Every structure is written in structure tokens, then in C-alpha cells.
Length: 79
Image (tube, rainbow, N blue to C red; front, side, top):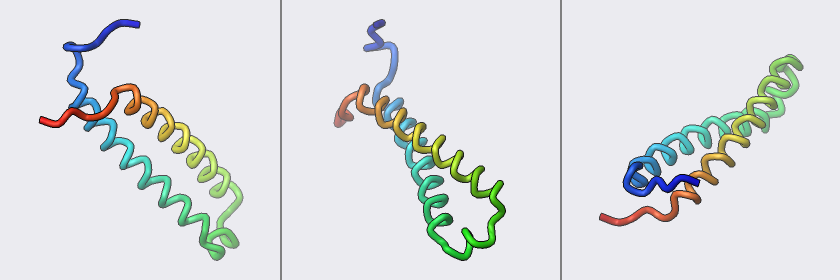
């Protein structure tokens, strides 16, 4: 493990990751709501459903990675 203290601005990196996480969570919420709509599920082609489900799995994995990265950075320091 290489110590990055002093080389990386943890606060800026944390802000960046939180912004990215918010975007991923928004995208994930959209897909979840879309798939909660019975009319959408009835009418959507199977290919669309499969594509959305694959995207949802990708989003969940990305959310997990970002949350883990934020945990490694530790709590934000107050100015």
C-alpha cells in the first residue's frame, strides 16, 4: 500500500465521489421506478427489460464500489 497523505486532496476526492454516487443513485432510482410500472413491464420488449436489468446490476456494482471508496477515505474533515 502506498501512502497518499499529502498527495491527494481527500476532501476534493470525497466531493467528486459523492457527486458521482448521487448521479448513479438517481439513475438507479429511475430504473427501479420504471420497472415498478406494470404497464411498462407489459409493453416493453424483452430486450429492453434485459438491457435495463443488466444496467441496474452495473449501477448496483458501481454504487458499491463508490461507497467502499468513500469509506476508505474516511469522514470528511471540517474546515
